Length: 459
Image (cartoon, rainbow, N blue to C red; front, side, top):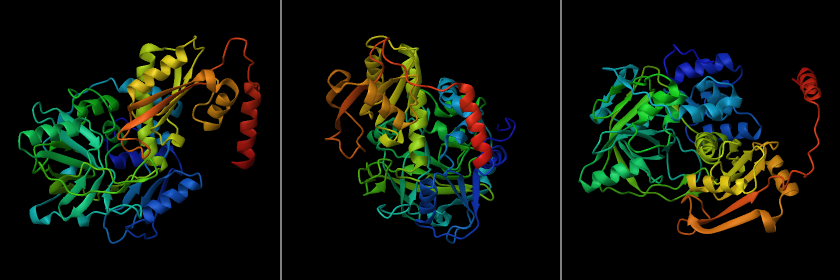
């Protein structure tokens, strides 16, 4: 497990992963091209059933190494939280309710190197084109830090960013959440929105960029809750925003009020290149980074990494919401077969009559992106599509156990939506009654013995 006394930095986490998970960090010394090669390597590894962190030491002509696929396996999420993998969602759910305020420092490693004015050049960073359908080179692991223009409360959120020039980025605030609200109100006041873009940080900082909660909560305090300790932050050099002292790279700048420029298409989690965009524009006023900085990329598209980053925090959020009403909910899963966004599986222990539909209704109300919710008993492995489909095949009758809601609000990145509207389906695949047959099983000791023998014979 990570050393709690070590700094909360990306490099400290990578060192912990190399020590705790042998073989989980793959260093590639062979030179690769800036565009496409990193993505192709990651996707081919995924097809082979492997998901290590990929550390490319020589990418194009860049002096910065590139690390990607950090979030391609759940065991590394658990390592970041310091818990066994089977406790990941439970622990994330519990920590999501904690708040620990950040601590401000005068400076930090993030200011080892500072470029401002004419020195600002996004071309110095290994920002790459990932898929042939992309409109250009994209920052895929940029956490935008901004402040509420009226209260000063900080928000941290992920947004794709297309390079438009030496100091210019295009972005889409398609989530329509807190940052969208900030920019909308700032534009009404005729002012730009100062921001900082964090590229490379400890996974718990990244997880904070995925946190969802009230607009009145400072998300640096939510990150502190995930860490169990205050996040150390320091003021930017050119904008009134604070950033983590241990970040690898930061882009300082502002979202320009009223400016709109074409942005996209971009390979999204749906497996399609999406041209939908709010077309906002960022002007970069400074690039700061620590000595020997690591450029941290996230493989976009329908990669294991991108989709897992959608699934894990949402599973924790939904589990917490469901247990508020239904304590016999045991597990929640957002399967990759549903893009880790549009389908959810819910497991329940001995659901009473009607409880499966109640659980599904809570899920649909909590997450507007959901199109399908399947509820099963707790003897079904909801992380295995085959087991869920087996439950549907043997415990469900379509005329009695399926409900459809029409013309509900859905995800705008769903390519099948109708002007933002979608249908929602509930499937009750729980046992029809107490006299329903039990599934066949093996003694646990026989299973343990078989697994041990297999590990000995085939590794």
